[in-house]
Length: 284
Image (cartoon, rainbow, N blue to C red; front, side, top):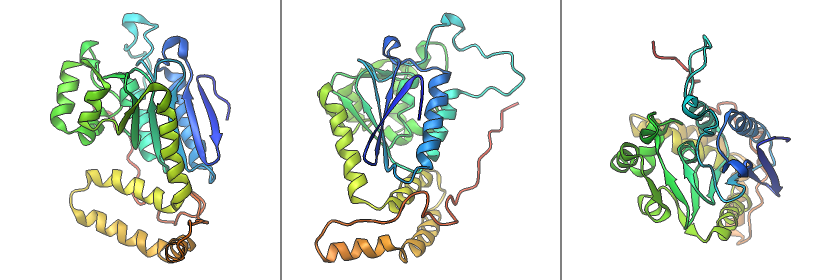
């Protein structure tokens, strides 16, 4: 994996990703979008990757969109193709990703720097970090499918307060609202995220984790618990006959650590993914 604005490191089955534009506070641009999507594609296909951790190089996580074009930053080009928000394209790919993603927010995460973390599964932050959904203060609207993700993470009232005011807020407020899981001194943020990633990677079935991640996200939009029952029943019917299920029970009874042989994507069933493709249909 070679990239220009992100860096990667393998720590056994944990893939560490660093946003790498520290001179620009890791400001988001199209190259970063493209490289993160390519990374997810490659990690999805790699049986040896169990968890992805995303952090920023330097003192910021991501300070938002690169404003190099000044007032023309958000002006759409003259292409005849329907306009698509690149933050939304990235977050839709994160949403489709089959493996857990943990955000290690080491510093400011503002605008798209905040919204890109919403489809990640756990956010761990520095106690000095600042966050903000500042779009209304820039004369634009929220990106990254934030109007779908943010209310599901923190509730509609807090999502509205943050997006209507556009104010930047501290890590303590993010913790209180449930946007982040825990706060740490900045030098301890990445170790805390890696510890959680290793706990997942070393103690769980890759097949179980893939199903559980997508079940939890997909059922947020389900119209009835029957939707969950239908998919869970089919998934349980499949995994119950696998070596992973046998190992899970036998290791518990024998009071020893489990060693799960299953891999994702290699050992996922034919019916995964069970949801239909959702094509982009531009509004007229």
